[in-house]
Image (cartoon, rainbow, N blue to C red; front, side, top):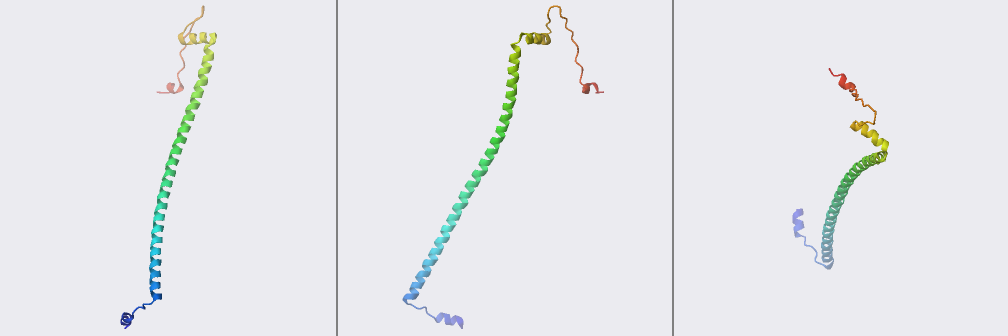
Length: 132
């Protein structure tokens, strides 16, 4: 009986009801537009966040690679500085006539007048002596 009663009830056709229906349609339309704007804003924020995070990660990787490269180059510089110091010392020694004479005697078996050179074999390492 409740269904039959609802069918027989006719909506009121006055200015208040018309205004109320218009107001409901406007509110529904605003709600729909608000949902669309929020969805677009949310997608935009996700896109921007993704771009920022991916940039941050790639920059962090690049930074770590550059730090490793810097450490490697610093080690190379230290080795080159050592070599430079040794070569500078060698240049100073080569300007000394006594050092050149000593070097010639030891490397090329040259001797001064009346000097005799004895070639003494170097002792072998202990590891080589202990092999059976």
